[in-house]
Image (tube, rainbow, N blue to C red; front, side, top):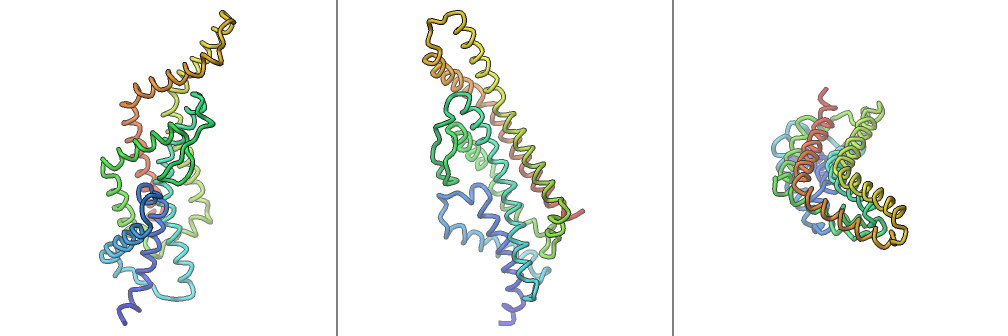
Length: 259
């Protein structure tokens, strides 16, 4: 009973950060992952993290304990959101390309997120997820949340960082990086399809007897799919670059509390 009174407050704070991390982070937050598995995994990871650093960061049930719970939940959500944000790169790029090809009005149900997503964006997301798992990226995510306690202790200054605007500035930089990566991924296809539109426009002026609307739609789809197949080897390096940026920004977020 004495052990519970001494360690349970800290253990609960650990569990709040790790469980909120699993709610947002890619792979583990997927809708097709059973809820009881997520809770069990969060509890198991909490046990491991608490056994390593928990005894040195004891908390107590005081008047500020509720704020500590909110703070730990926010830390976990921020870390998970950074990872999730960089996984949306492929979906944003897919949205750009879908509009050019003509798939803008056609969305498919994504079982991983439980929402509608663009066709090509969903395809690229699946490929990126498989590549991420093949590179053991999910192991690095677990390592990141466990090692976060070395740099972001329970007595961190998250509310101060939010009040000073540092978190807001960091989120804006993250969004700008994600948009740049998305445009980099979609730019070749967008440029090729734009030139296709120019060519179709010239054809309409030179040979007005052709129905450009009938010819243009299947032609743009054909060119889009051919370029997509040709560019798949290059996408591997872009995906890896996105993963590197993801962990780099997670490290930057953690570094805000060390300097």
